[in-house]
Image 1 (cartoon, helix red, strand yellow):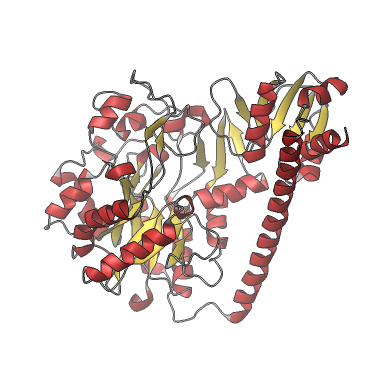
Image 2: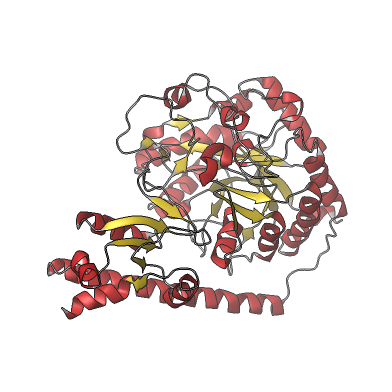
Length: 514
Protein backbone atom coordinates (compact mmCIF):
# COMPACT_ATOMS: atom_id res chain seq x y z
CA UNK A 1 0.00 0.00 0.00
CA UNK A 2 1.27 3.43 -0.95
CA UNK A 3 0.32 5.69 1.97
CA UNK A 4 0.83 8.86 -0.05
CA UNK A 5 -1.80 7.84 -2.62
CA UNK A 6 -4.30 6.37 -0.18
CA UNK A 7 -7.63 8.28 -0.25
CA UNK A 8 -8.95 9.60 3.05
CA UNK A 9 -11.97 7.59 4.23
CA UNK A 10 -14.89 9.83 5.20
CA UNK A 11 -18.00 8.25 6.76
CA UNK A 12 -21.38 9.96 6.36
CA UNK A 13 -22.66 10.88 9.83
CA UNK A 14 -26.27 11.32 10.99
CA UNK A 15 -26.67 13.70 13.98
CA UNK A 16 -30.22 12.54 14.75
CA UNK A 17 -29.75 10.71 18.02
CA UNK A 18 -30.75 13.26 20.62
CA UNK A 19 -33.99 14.87 21.72
CA UNK A 20 -35.08 18.10 20.02
CA UNK A 21 -38.08 20.35 20.53
CA UNK A 22 -39.26 19.94 16.94
CA UNK A 23 -39.05 16.15 17.00
CA UNK A 24 -41.02 16.19 20.24
CA UNK A 25 -43.70 18.24 18.51
CA UNK A 26 -43.83 16.22 15.30
CA UNK A 27 -43.37 12.65 16.49
CA UNK A 28 -43.90 12.62 20.27
CA UNK A 29 -41.97 13.43 23.44
CA UNK A 30 -38.43 12.05 23.47
CA UNK A 31 -38.44 10.86 19.86
CA UNK A 32 -35.12 10.17 18.15
CA UNK A 33 -34.32 7.82 15.31
CA UNK A 34 -33.63 5.15 17.94
CA UNK A 35 -37.43 4.85 18.29
CA UNK A 36 -37.82 3.65 14.72
CA UNK A 37 -34.78 1.37 15.12
CA UNK A 38 -36.11 -0.26 18.30
CA UNK A 39 -39.59 -0.88 16.91
CA UNK A 40 -38.51 -2.18 13.48
CA UNK A 41 -40.27 -5.33 12.31
CA UNK A 42 -39.28 -8.43 10.35
CA UNK A 43 -41.21 -8.57 7.08
CA UNK A 44 -39.81 -11.75 5.55
CA UNK A 45 -37.73 -14.77 6.48
CA UNK A 46 -34.11 -13.81 7.13
CA UNK A 47 -34.93 -10.10 7.45
CA UNK A 48 -32.34 -8.61 9.79
CA UNK A 49 -34.60 -6.47 11.95
CA UNK A 50 -34.65 -4.98 14.47
CA UNK A 51 -30.99 -3.93 14.54
CA UNK A 52 -29.53 -3.66 18.04
CA UNK A 53 -26.37 -1.70 18.87
CA UNK A 54 -23.74 -3.83 20.59
CA UNK A 55 -24.43 -3.92 24.30
CA UNK A 56 -27.68 -1.99 23.80
CA UNK A 57 -25.69 1.23 23.39
CA UNK A 58 -28.52 3.56 22.32
CA UNK A 59 -26.36 6.61 22.81
CA UNK A 60 -27.33 10.25 23.17
CA UNK A 61 -25.35 12.58 20.91
CA UNK A 62 -25.92 15.39 23.35
CA UNK A 63 -23.28 13.78 25.58
CA UNK A 64 -19.56 14.25 25.21
CA UNK A 65 -18.93 10.64 26.14
CA UNK A 66 -20.85 9.35 23.08
CA UNK A 67 -18.97 11.53 20.60
CA UNK A 68 -15.63 10.82 22.27
CA UNK A 69 -16.22 7.09 21.86
CA UNK A 70 -17.17 7.52 18.19
CA UNK A 71 -14.00 9.49 17.53
CA UNK A 72 -11.87 6.82 19.17
CA UNK A 73 -13.57 4.00 17.25
CA UNK A 74 -13.16 5.80 13.95
CA UNK A 75 -9.48 6.45 14.52
CA UNK A 76 -8.81 2.88 15.68
CA UNK A 77 -10.38 1.31 12.58
CA UNK A 78 -9.05 3.66 9.92
CA UNK A 79 -11.90 6.14 9.38
CA UNK A 80 -10.22 9.47 8.69
CA UNK A 81 -13.23 11.67 9.35
CA UNK A 82 -16.98 12.17 9.43
CA UNK A 83 -19.16 13.95 6.89
CA UNK A 84 -21.92 15.45 9.06
CA UNK A 85 -25.36 15.99 7.60
CA UNK A 86 -26.03 19.71 7.87
CA UNK A 87 -29.67 20.82 8.05
CA UNK A 88 -30.13 24.52 7.34
CA UNK A 89 -33.55 25.76 6.23
CA UNK A 90 -35.51 28.86 5.34
CA UNK A 91 -34.47 32.01 7.21
CA UNK A 92 -31.55 30.22 8.86
CA UNK A 93 -33.64 27.69 10.79
CA UNK A 94 -31.40 24.80 11.84
CA UNK A 95 -32.18 21.21 12.77
CA UNK A 96 -30.00 18.57 14.46
CA UNK A 97 -27.19 21.09 14.74
CA UNK A 98 -26.24 20.44 18.38
CA UNK A 99 -23.68 17.61 17.91
CA UNK A 100 -21.61 19.71 15.48
CA UNK A 101 -21.93 22.81 17.66
CA UNK A 102 -20.89 20.80 20.72
CA UNK A 103 -17.93 19.39 18.83
CA UNK A 104 -16.84 22.92 18.00
CA UNK A 105 -16.62 23.55 21.76
CA UNK A 106 -15.09 20.18 22.67
CA UNK A 107 -11.65 20.86 21.21
CA UNK A 108 -10.13 17.82 22.92
CA UNK A 109 -12.18 15.36 20.83
CA UNK A 110 -10.05 14.31 17.87
CA UNK A 111 -12.85 14.03 15.30
CA UNK A 112 -12.03 15.40 11.83
CA UNK A 113 -15.26 16.42 10.11
CA UNK A 114 -16.86 18.26 7.22
CA UNK A 115 -20.46 19.12 6.28
CA UNK A 116 -22.95 17.66 3.84
CA UNK A 117 -25.84 20.10 3.36
CA UNK A 118 -29.09 18.14 2.97
CA UNK A 119 -30.91 21.11 1.51
CA UNK A 120 -34.33 19.55 0.88
CA UNK A 121 -37.48 20.50 2.78
CA UNK A 122 -38.61 18.14 5.52
CA UNK A 123 -42.05 16.71 4.88
CA UNK A 124 -44.68 14.47 6.43
CA UNK A 125 -44.83 10.98 5.02
CA UNK A 126 -48.25 11.46 3.45
CA UNK A 127 -47.19 14.51 1.48
CA UNK A 128 -46.97 14.38 -2.31
CA UNK A 129 -44.12 16.88 -2.18
CA UNK A 130 -40.64 15.52 -2.85
CA UNK A 131 -38.30 15.86 0.09
CA UNK A 132 -36.70 14.26 3.10
CA UNK A 133 -39.10 11.89 4.87
CA UNK A 134 -38.54 11.11 8.54
CA UNK A 135 -40.00 8.05 10.26
CA UNK A 136 -43.20 7.26 8.37
CA UNK A 137 -44.50 5.10 11.21
CA UNK A 138 -44.46 8.04 13.64
CA UNK A 139 -47.29 10.50 13.10
CA UNK A 140 -47.93 11.19 16.78
CA UNK A 141 -48.46 14.92 16.65
CA UNK A 142 -51.93 16.38 16.35
CA UNK A 143 -50.46 19.42 14.66
CA UNK A 144 -51.89 20.14 11.23
CA UNK A 145 -49.49 20.73 8.37
CA UNK A 146 -51.77 21.18 5.39
CA UNK A 147 -49.00 21.29 2.80
CA UNK A 148 -47.18 18.35 4.36
CA UNK A 149 -44.10 20.50 4.96
CA UNK A 150 -42.54 20.25 8.40
CA UNK A 151 -39.62 22.53 7.61
CA UNK A 152 -39.59 24.84 4.58
CA UNK A 153 -36.54 25.32 2.40
CA UNK A 154 -35.93 28.64 0.68
CA UNK A 155 -32.43 29.58 -0.45
CA UNK A 156 -33.11 33.32 -0.33
CA UNK A 157 -30.68 35.91 -1.63
CA UNK A 158 -27.33 37.47 -0.72
CA UNK A 159 -28.38 38.37 2.81
CA UNK A 160 -29.38 34.77 3.54
CA UNK A 161 -26.28 33.31 1.83
CA UNK A 162 -24.01 35.58 3.82
CA UNK A 163 -25.74 34.62 7.07
CA UNK A 164 -25.34 30.93 6.24
CA UNK A 165 -21.64 31.35 5.49
CA UNK A 166 -21.12 33.31 8.72
CA UNK A 167 -22.62 30.37 10.60
CA UNK A 168 -20.29 27.93 8.81
CA UNK A 169 -17.13 30.03 9.18
CA UNK A 170 -16.22 29.01 12.77
CA UNK A 171 -16.42 25.37 11.69
CA UNK A 172 -14.30 26.03 8.59
CA UNK A 173 -11.65 27.67 10.77
CA UNK A 174 -11.51 24.75 13.20
CA UNK A 175 -8.24 22.82 12.80
CA UNK A 176 -10.17 19.54 12.73
CA UNK A 177 -12.35 20.62 9.80
CA UNK A 178 -11.38 18.58 6.72
CA UNK A 179 -9.60 20.68 4.10
CA UNK A 180 -8.02 20.06 0.70
CA UNK A 181 -4.95 22.27 0.25
CA UNK A 182 -6.31 24.41 3.06
CA UNK A 183 -9.74 24.73 1.45
CA UNK A 184 -12.69 23.56 3.59
CA UNK A 185 -14.55 20.61 2.05
CA UNK A 186 -18.32 21.11 1.78
CA UNK A 187 -20.81 18.76 0.13
CA UNK A 188 -24.07 19.87 -1.47
CA UNK A 189 -26.39 16.86 -1.21
CA UNK A 190 -28.86 18.19 -3.81
CA UNK A 191 -27.18 21.00 -5.77
CA UNK A 192 -29.59 20.63 -8.70
CA UNK A 193 -32.41 21.77 -6.40
CA UNK A 194 -30.62 25.02 -5.54
CA UNK A 195 -31.54 27.35 -8.38
CA UNK A 196 -29.19 30.16 -7.32
CA UNK A 197 -26.27 27.73 -6.85
CA UNK A 198 -23.95 29.78 -9.06
CA UNK A 199 -24.61 33.06 -7.26
CA UNK A 200 -24.57 31.42 -3.84
CA UNK A 201 -21.22 29.68 -4.31
CA UNK A 202 -19.69 32.83 -5.82
CA UNK A 203 -20.80 34.71 -2.71
CA UNK A 204 -19.31 32.05 -0.44
CA UNK A 205 -16.00 31.97 -2.32
CA UNK A 206 -15.73 35.76 -2.02
CA UNK A 207 -16.46 35.60 1.70
CA UNK A 208 -13.95 32.77 2.16
CA UNK A 209 -11.23 34.90 0.58
CA UNK A 210 -12.21 37.86 2.75
CA UNK A 211 -11.96 35.59 5.80
CA UNK A 212 -8.40 34.63 4.88
CA UNK A 213 -9.18 31.12 3.60
CA UNK A 214 -7.39 29.94 0.42
CA UNK A 215 -10.76 28.94 -1.03
CA UNK A 216 -13.44 26.28 -0.73
CA UNK A 217 -13.60 22.73 -2.09
CA UNK A 218 -17.26 22.32 -3.02
CA UNK A 219 -18.60 18.87 -3.92
CA UNK A 220 -21.96 18.16 -5.54
CA UNK A 221 -23.77 14.87 -4.98
CA UNK A 222 -26.56 13.58 -7.21
CA UNK A 223 -25.37 15.38 -10.34
CA UNK A 224 -24.71 13.81 -13.74
CA UNK A 225 -22.87 16.60 -15.53
CA UNK A 226 -20.08 19.06 -14.66
CA UNK A 227 -21.20 22.14 -12.76
CA UNK A 228 -18.92 25.16 -12.99
CA UNK A 229 -20.17 26.34 -9.59
CA UNK A 230 -18.60 23.29 -7.92
CA UNK A 231 -15.16 21.71 -7.79
CA UNK A 232 -16.06 18.04 -7.82
CA UNK A 233 -18.88 15.51 -7.83
CA UNK A 234 -19.78 12.64 -5.55
CA UNK A 235 -21.62 9.49 -6.64
CA UNK A 236 -24.03 9.01 -3.77
CA UNK A 237 -24.60 5.40 -2.83
CA UNK A 238 -26.53 3.23 -2.53
CA UNK A 239 -29.25 5.26 -4.26
CA UNK A 240 -27.29 5.55 -7.50
CA UNK A 241 -26.75 1.80 -7.77
CA UNK A 242 -30.22 0.82 -6.56
CA UNK A 243 -31.69 3.09 -9.24
CA UNK A 244 -29.66 1.23 -11.85
CA UNK A 245 -30.83 -2.12 -10.53
CA UNK A 246 -34.40 -0.82 -10.59
CA UNK A 247 -33.95 0.10 -14.24
CA UNK A 248 -32.64 -3.38 -15.00
CA UNK A 249 -35.49 -5.04 -13.11
CA UNK A 250 -32.96 -6.55 -10.69
CA UNK A 251 -35.09 -6.34 -7.57
CA UNK A 252 -37.16 -8.86 -5.64
CA UNK A 253 -40.36 -8.07 -3.76
CA UNK A 254 -40.61 -9.84 -0.40
CA UNK A 255 -43.86 -9.18 1.44
CA UNK A 256 -44.04 -5.72 -0.13
CA UNK A 257 -40.40 -4.79 0.61
CA UNK A 258 -38.24 -4.10 -2.42
CA UNK A 259 -35.03 -6.12 -2.01
CA UNK A 260 -31.66 -5.86 -3.74
CA UNK A 261 -28.86 -8.41 -3.53
CA UNK A 262 -25.88 -6.90 -1.71
CA UNK A 263 -23.45 -8.31 -4.30
CA UNK A 264 -25.48 -6.72 -7.11
CA UNK A 265 -25.34 -3.34 -5.43
CA UNK A 266 -21.60 -3.58 -4.97
CA UNK A 267 -21.15 -4.62 -8.60
CA UNK A 268 -22.91 -1.42 -9.64
CA UNK A 269 -20.86 0.64 -7.18
CA UNK A 270 -17.61 -0.69 -8.64
CA UNK A 271 -18.84 -0.16 -12.21
CA UNK A 272 -19.78 3.47 -11.56
CA UNK A 273 -17.89 5.95 -13.68
CA UNK A 274 -16.86 9.52 -12.98
CA UNK A 275 -18.54 12.44 -14.68
CA UNK A 276 -16.51 13.10 -17.80
CA UNK A 277 -13.78 15.66 -17.30
CA UNK A 278 -14.76 16.22 -13.69
CA UNK A 279 -13.22 15.08 -10.44
CA UNK A 280 -15.65 12.53 -9.05
CA UNK A 281 -15.50 10.93 -5.62
CA UNK A 282 -16.88 7.44 -5.10
CA UNK A 283 -18.94 6.12 -2.21
CA UNK A 284 -19.05 2.68 -0.60
CA UNK A 285 -22.05 1.33 1.27
CA UNK A 286 -22.19 -0.79 4.41
CA UNK A 287 -25.79 -1.90 3.83
CA UNK A 288 -29.32 -0.57 3.45
CA UNK A 289 -32.73 -1.19 5.00
CA UNK A 290 -35.17 1.68 5.44
CA UNK A 291 -38.11 -0.44 6.66
CA UNK A 292 -37.66 0.90 10.23
CA UNK A 293 -38.84 4.23 8.81
CA UNK A 294 -40.99 3.17 5.85
CA UNK A 295 -42.40 -0.22 6.82
CA UNK A 296 -43.49 -2.47 3.95
CA UNK A 297 -43.07 0.42 1.54
CA UNK A 298 -39.35 0.28 2.20
CA UNK A 299 -36.31 -1.08 0.41
CA UNK A 300 -33.47 -3.19 1.73
CA UNK A 301 -30.39 -5.17 0.77
CA UNK A 302 -30.32 -8.90 1.31
CA UNK A 303 -27.55 -11.47 1.70
CA UNK A 304 -25.06 -8.89 2.93
CA UNK A 305 -22.02 -9.74 5.01
CA UNK A 306 -18.86 -8.11 6.36
CA UNK A 307 -16.83 -10.37 4.04
CA UNK A 308 -18.57 -9.07 0.91
CA UNK A 309 -18.16 -5.53 2.19
CA UNK A 310 -14.44 -5.97 2.88
CA UNK A 311 -13.59 -7.44 -0.51
CA UNK A 312 -15.53 -4.87 -2.48
CA UNK A 313 -14.50 -1.93 -0.36
CA UNK A 314 -10.86 -2.88 -0.94
CA UNK A 315 -11.51 -2.73 -4.69
CA UNK A 316 -13.20 0.65 -4.32
CA UNK A 317 -10.20 2.00 -2.42
CA UNK A 318 -7.94 0.85 -5.26
CA UNK A 319 -10.28 2.37 -7.86
CA UNK A 320 -10.38 5.70 -6.02
CA UNK A 321 -6.59 5.76 -5.85
CA UNK A 322 -6.36 4.95 -9.58
CA UNK A 323 -8.41 8.07 -10.30
CA UNK A 324 -6.19 10.11 -8.00
CA UNK A 325 -9.04 10.93 -5.61
CA UNK A 326 -8.19 12.47 -2.28
CA UNK A 327 -11.36 11.19 -0.60
CA UNK A 328 -13.54 8.08 -0.53
CA UNK A 329 -16.92 8.28 1.20
CA UNK A 330 -18.72 5.52 3.10
CA UNK A 331 -22.45 5.59 3.66
CA UNK A 332 -22.71 5.53 6.59
CA UNK A 333 -21.25 5.61 10.09
CA UNK A 334 -24.53 5.58 12.00
CA UNK A 335 -27.62 5.69 9.77
CA UNK A 336 -29.30 2.99 11.86
CA UNK A 337 -32.81 3.80 10.65
CA UNK A 338 -31.75 2.93 7.10
CA UNK A 339 -29.51 -0.02 7.95
CA UNK A 340 -26.35 1.86 6.93
CA UNK A 341 -23.82 1.83 9.73
CA UNK A 342 -20.32 0.73 10.63
CA UNK A 343 -20.85 0.95 14.36
CA UNK A 344 -20.85 -2.40 16.17
CA UNK A 345 -24.14 -4.25 16.55
CA UNK A 346 -25.34 -7.43 18.28
CA UNK A 347 -25.27 -9.53 15.09
CA UNK A 348 -21.85 -8.72 13.65
CA UNK A 349 -20.02 -7.05 16.53
CA UNK A 350 -17.08 -5.06 15.19
CA UNK A 351 -16.91 -7.01 11.91
CA UNK A 352 -17.70 -4.08 9.61
CA UNK A 353 -15.13 -1.87 11.31
CA UNK A 354 -12.62 -4.71 11.06
CA UNK A 355 -13.53 -4.96 7.36
CA UNK A 356 -12.68 -1.29 6.82
CA UNK A 357 -9.32 -1.73 8.49
CA UNK A 358 -8.55 -4.96 6.60
CA UNK A 359 -9.60 -3.49 3.26
CA UNK A 360 -7.31 -0.54 3.85
CA UNK A 361 -4.37 -2.72 4.87
CA UNK A 362 -4.75 -5.07 1.88
CA UNK A 363 -5.48 -2.49 -0.81
CA UNK A 364 -2.82 -2.44 -3.53
CA UNK A 365 -2.16 1.23 -4.18
CA UNK A 366 0.24 2.12 -6.98
CA UNK A 367 1.02 5.23 -9.00
CA UNK A 368 -0.84 3.74 -12.00
CA UNK A 369 -3.69 5.91 -13.28
CA UNK A 370 -6.65 5.23 -15.55
CA UNK A 371 -5.24 5.02 -19.10
CA UNK A 372 -6.43 6.64 -22.32
CA UNK A 373 -8.17 3.51 -23.61
CA UNK A 374 -10.37 3.24 -20.54
CA UNK A 375 -11.07 6.96 -20.73
CA UNK A 376 -12.14 6.67 -24.39
CA UNK A 377 -14.52 3.80 -23.61
CA UNK A 378 -15.98 5.81 -20.74
CA UNK A 379 -16.51 8.73 -23.16
CA UNK A 380 -18.44 6.48 -25.52
CA UNK A 381 -20.68 5.24 -22.73
CA UNK A 382 -21.30 8.77 -21.55
CA UNK A 383 -22.25 9.87 -25.07
CA UNK A 384 -24.67 6.95 -25.34
CA UNK A 385 -26.25 7.88 -22.02
CA UNK A 386 -26.60 11.53 -22.98
CA UNK A 387 -28.08 10.57 -26.36
CA UNK A 388 -30.66 8.36 -24.63
CA UNK A 389 -31.56 11.17 -22.21
CA UNK A 390 -31.83 13.67 -25.06
CA UNK A 391 -34.26 11.44 -26.98
CA UNK A 392 -36.23 10.74 -23.83
CA UNK A 393 -36.68 14.37 -22.84
CA UNK A 394 -37.37 15.46 -26.42
CA UNK A 395 -40.27 13.03 -26.50
CA UNK A 396 -41.45 14.20 -23.08
CA UNK A 397 -41.44 17.80 -24.37
CA UNK A 398 -43.34 16.83 -27.51
CA UNK A 399 -46.07 15.09 -25.51
CA UNK A 400 -46.38 18.02 -23.12
CA UNK A 401 -46.44 20.48 -26.04
CA UNK A 402 -49.34 18.64 -27.71
CA UNK A 403 -51.14 18.31 -24.37
CA UNK A 404 -50.86 22.05 -23.70
CA UNK A 405 -52.11 22.80 -27.22
CA UNK A 406 -55.16 20.65 -26.57
CA UNK A 407 -55.70 22.41 -23.24
CA UNK A 408 -55.68 25.80 -24.98
CA UNK A 409 -58.26 24.51 -27.46
CA UNK A 410 -60.33 22.92 -24.66
CA UNK A 411 -59.97 19.55 -26.38
CA UNK A 412 -58.60 17.41 -23.55
CA UNK A 413 -61.25 14.71 -23.08
CA UNK A 414 -59.76 11.50 -21.68
CA UNK A 415 -63.18 10.37 -20.45
CA UNK A 416 -64.60 10.50 -24.00
CA UNK A 417 -61.65 8.52 -25.35
CA UNK A 418 -62.10 5.76 -22.78
CA UNK A 419 -65.86 5.69 -23.27
CA UNK A 420 -65.33 5.06 -26.99
CA UNK A 421 -62.89 2.25 -26.13
CA UNK A 422 -65.32 0.78 -23.57
CA UNK A 423 -62.84 1.35 -20.77
CA UNK A 424 -64.22 2.04 -17.30
CA UNK A 425 -61.21 1.46 -15.05
CA UNK A 426 -57.57 2.30 -15.72
CA UNK A 427 -54.10 2.09 -14.16
CA UNK A 428 -51.15 4.37 -14.90
CA UNK A 429 -47.72 2.93 -15.67
CA UNK A 430 -45.06 5.53 -14.84
CA UNK A 431 -45.72 7.96 -12.00
CA UNK A 432 -43.13 10.64 -12.70
CA UNK A 433 -44.07 14.04 -14.20
CA UNK A 434 -46.45 12.85 -16.92
CA UNK A 435 -47.99 10.24 -14.66
CA UNK A 436 -48.71 12.79 -11.94
CA UNK A 437 -50.33 15.19 -14.42
CA UNK A 438 -52.35 12.39 -15.94
CA UNK A 439 -53.59 11.22 -12.53
CA UNK A 440 -54.76 14.73 -11.69
CA UNK A 441 -56.52 15.14 -15.06
CA UNK A 442 -58.27 11.77 -14.91
CA UNK A 443 -59.51 12.50 -11.42
CA UNK A 444 -60.89 15.83 -12.65
CA UNK A 445 -62.75 13.99 -15.40
CA UNK A 446 -64.02 11.35 -12.94
CA UNK A 447 -62.21 8.52 -14.70
CA UNK A 448 -61.67 5.70 -12.22
CA UNK A 449 -57.91 5.31 -11.73
CA UNK A 450 -57.37 2.19 -9.63
CA UNK A 451 -53.63 2.30 -9.03
CA UNK A 452 -50.21 3.19 -10.44
CA UNK A 453 -47.23 1.09 -11.50
CA UNK A 454 -43.69 2.37 -11.07
CA UNK A 455 -40.25 1.13 -10.07
CA UNK A 456 -39.93 4.12 -7.76
CA UNK A 457 -42.90 4.22 -5.42
CA UNK A 458 -43.59 7.82 -4.46
CA UNK A 459 -46.06 9.52 -2.15
CA UNK A 460 -49.56 9.88 -3.63
CA UNK A 461 -51.77 9.71 -0.57
CA UNK A 462 -53.36 6.76 1.19
CA UNK A 463 -56.08 6.41 -1.46
CA UNK A 464 -53.73 5.62 -4.34
CA UNK A 465 -51.55 2.53 -4.28
CA UNK A 466 -48.48 2.21 -6.49
CA UNK A 467 -47.30 -1.28 -7.42
CA UNK A 468 -43.84 -2.30 -8.50
CA UNK A 469 -43.78 -3.72 -12.07
CA UNK A 470 -42.69 -7.12 -10.74
CA UNK A 471 -45.66 -7.38 -8.41
CA UNK A 472 -49.01 -8.97 -9.19
CA UNK A 473 -51.54 -6.17 -9.55
CA UNK A 474 -55.34 -6.24 -9.93
CA UNK A 475 -57.17 -6.31 -13.25
CA UNK A 476 -58.34 -3.11 -14.93
CA UNK A 477 -59.84 -2.43 -18.31
CA UNK A 478 -56.70 -0.63 -19.45
CA UNK A 479 -53.20 0.48 -18.54
CA UNK A 480 -51.87 3.83 -19.77
CA UNK A 481 -48.10 3.98 -20.22
CA UNK A 482 -46.50 7.37 -19.59
CA UNK A 483 -42.91 6.08 -19.46
CA UNK A 484 -40.46 6.48 -22.34
CA UNK A 485 -39.72 2.86 -23.33
CA UNK A 486 -43.29 2.20 -24.41
CA UNK A 487 -42.67 -0.78 -26.70
CA UNK A 488 -40.47 -2.64 -24.21
CA UNK A 489 -42.94 -2.03 -21.38
CA UNK A 490 -45.87 -3.15 -23.53
CA UNK A 491 -44.11 -6.40 -24.40
CA UNK A 492 -43.47 -7.15 -20.73
CA UNK A 493 -47.00 -6.27 -19.67
CA UNK A 494 -48.54 -8.48 -22.34
CA UNK A 495 -46.91 -11.51 -20.71
CA UNK A 496 -49.08 -11.17 -17.59
CA UNK A 497 -51.80 -8.61 -18.34
CA UNK A 498 -54.79 -9.23 -20.62
CA UNK A 499 -56.45 -5.82 -20.64
CA UNK A 500 -55.98 -3.01 -23.13
CA UNK A 501 -52.69 -1.09 -23.20
CA UNK A 502 -52.38 2.50 -24.45
CA UNK A 503 -49.50 4.90 -24.48
CA UNK A 504 -50.27 8.43 -23.31
CA UNK A 505 -48.89 9.71 -26.61
CA UNK A 506 -51.31 7.69 -28.73
CA UNK A 507 -54.25 8.92 -26.65
CA UNK A 508 -53.16 12.53 -27.08
CA UNK A 509 -52.57 11.97 -30.80
CA UNK A 510 -56.10 10.59 -31.08
CA UNK A 511 -57.43 13.76 -29.45
CA UNK A 512 -55.41 15.81 -31.92
CA UNK A 513 -57.29 14.06 -34.76
CA UNK A 514 -60.73 14.91 -33.37
